[in-house]
Image (cartoon, rainbow, N blue to C red; front, side):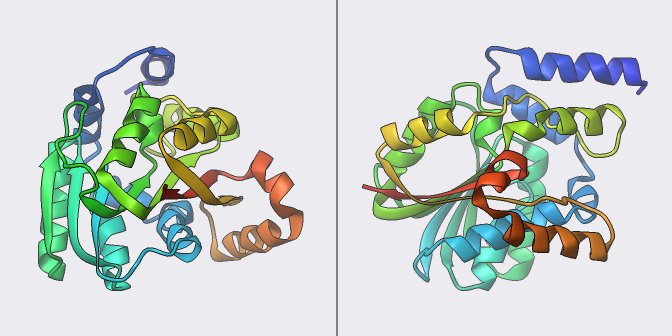
Length: 252
């Protein structure tokens, strides 16, 4: 695919006002080398590592992993005894196929479900916890989506929600145009204040918020330097320059 075509695609992805879940699923069905691409990015594993370190999900929980993709989030939390059973939901048949194979091989107790629209098919308060990694930006009506996540989690349950910082939007677009990383497909990055408003109006209390990741990929010395700088420059600067926002939310 030439650069002009990629520019046109990225413009289309970022300027849509509305898109259905099925469009998101069709896009991710095309990213067949998702795991291979993300092995090269330290920022990918950081969503799980940082989410785990900041949260306090009870051991042996029934977890909804929404937009689970290839199942790495569920697997990471299962390996740390947080997951008794998982419901891995996604919009993409291809991602769910890989997810099911990975979790079955590991011995995780799980179910997979394709999601194509709201409302979600789950019962009120069905889950002990929700993993929502890099998902809300792919939903054209994120406020309604977060309300549904609140509905299906029990009182006192925790949700880990991660999403890219809006300041990195242009970098994501350039990476896709120049084929340095996979595209994000249909998406709209959400500002911090707007996202906090959606979360709090949905019946969650934000108990922890952190912005992290300065160096998403590169040689190990550069990754280590980035991690050191994250500690040095402080929360205010990280809020401006960090790649990922993490919210640990509790259903109230």
